Image (tube, rainbow, N blue to C red; front, top):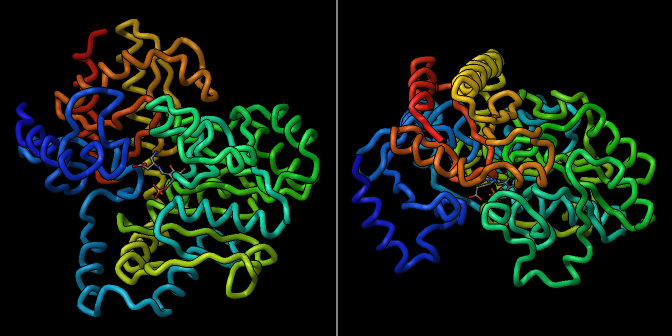
Length: 426
Ligand code: KE4
């Protein structure tokens, strides 16, 4: 297949946009080659500038859980746009979205809309710091919570992809207040808490990590963090920007039966439009301005188009919970068949999965944290990525990302994907 138009568009884009992209992970920098410029998408398929069709496993990094251009969402956006696109004033629709999220996630007392997952996570740790009057946070190496300064210390996603350990522009003062532990290592967390007694405001975690590939919490890990937070009066923050409304209607809190103190959202709750949110226990959320003095604001927070897209998407998920069973079955089918094909070829690999989040690692050791993820055969993944892309299968362009399935994928699409894997050779 030719990608001449994408190559031409990429050259042109680099004249006006840093690296030709508006977000680094899109640049194909780690896998090499030219990023595809996408013209349109429908259901499970993307069409690039050269009109090549791809079966899609990125889904805008999570939002498109029902597939691209999902008609009820499109219709809702078009209709709402006729009433103007932004007011900068409260609307009933924002309350409807908040009420629907509280129905789907019962332990969220109050929730504030923002315009990205970064904003949601940045606001949540500011709130935790304001509430506890402490400065430090604990995050986990390889987890990514957006590009706010405090998070750009041993982060995942594009920073792992490009092996960026410290980011110029993040001051030592900010970095010193960010402590890192290894994912699934409770002893390290306990050690950090003991040596920073009464200084830790929050522990923030991706309850299923999706930014170093997909990495699951080992039994007892999240429960242990909950216990440490209870013992030490630390705010426990679930970053559910990826997992929220994806791995279950109630996200990871429902899946693992654990109540976080604060939870952040993004991606699915915007239906593909820019939305993030943070919410949780009333006693903490009441410190947010205008109720309290922890200031947080946004011109386009609760934007009507973003709200109607998210409200329509969440309503579909809330009223059709069978969607989660369908996604579970489809992703399990992909996992089992992909593993059988690779094993049949004698290719050592590990597949991590929870619900419709899945990642493939070329490794003969289990992938349980950033260190084990980074010791997998990354160059082999990059070759696998291009083999799949050249044959019409669009995977995330990095071994340090989770794949996301949409419910628009059919078993024919999954079988076609497996057929392409069968033609892969090391
Ligand atoms: P945004 O600011 O990109 O909306 O959300 C930041 C964020 C926060 N928390 C988690 C768990 C996330 O995965 C993200 C963003 N995810 C990346 C994909 N790994 C977005 C893709 C990109 O950076 O272009």
